[in-house]
Length: 199
Image (tube, rainbow, N blue to C red; front, side):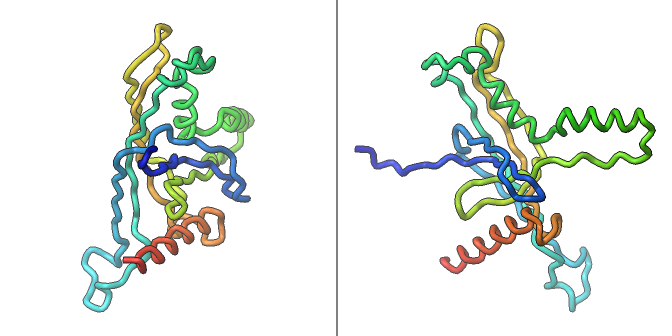
């Protein structure tokens, strides 16, 4: 009988930024052993006067960094057809597409530019949510995605990789208070406040 705890998988979830509908989920095959979080307070200024020294202009800028491992060993042992044909390229592609605009948007923008449209707005993307556990789900923007492919099959498909993920938490300083992202952030902060009461 095993006495090890049940470990759930962390995930990155994509959500429609307007409706809040879930678009997709990327489960982390192995949870990172370490998550590094950095919080930079948003104070009034570098040299506030004495009446302002304790004032904050908003939530801190929070960044999260972790290293995710992806490995096709088990799938290859079970002769999984996707792993046999592509290795871990589908999983890597799903992660990489978090920082790409869609090809249809790129094509549409090129068509607009050829028609002489004066202003083409920056491209929208899905809202990305980092789901670590039920108390730690927060909207994020991917700031870094570094992939180290470490082993390959005979067709040179990667079969093992380490992915360094850098994320910036999107707070109500970054998004509308009433948007799905704002609601997710406020739930995240309220859960943190409730957790602090347990200390």
